[in-house]
Image (cartoon, rainbow over all chains, first blue to last red; front, side, top):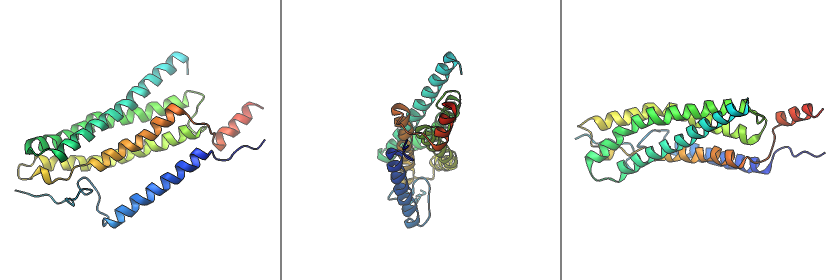
Length: 50
Length: 165
């Protein structure tokens, strides 16, 4: 009996996961490696002290 | 696992998992308020509330969901490594829990900054991307747990072949 090695939905999900992971790493690298709350917004993580 | 115990375990697992999603939704709502409100006190209060929501709702529910999920799969015929949907759910839930625990220090720091009267809270920038991302990641195990798509791992196929002789 020919048993499929990997279901198609697993293959497609794997490819999507890899693409998303590469995109996240690329964004992190392009943003200069800085990561954390407030650094995804246009403020650039700058905190204004009165 | 006996049927009555299995049903109790499933009830606790579903309650913890859905509660986890709800707690993240509350965290997203606090972020929405922090990023859109023009009232400084509202923004400050939203940031201050993010830490207790994370510590006392999101974290306990995340750990409960992970532990009950493992117990549930090990105590039933699904197993932990036999089916792709269980395995992927385990990986995604573990990943989300680890990222959450690593992120807690940042949430605390954000709340501490908002608590400082010298800091303008409207410039903190929020934590929407992480919380919305977490919510999106957790929708994957939710869908997998409901639809239970076919597909056995190599280990699952081997065990099935051994059982059927």
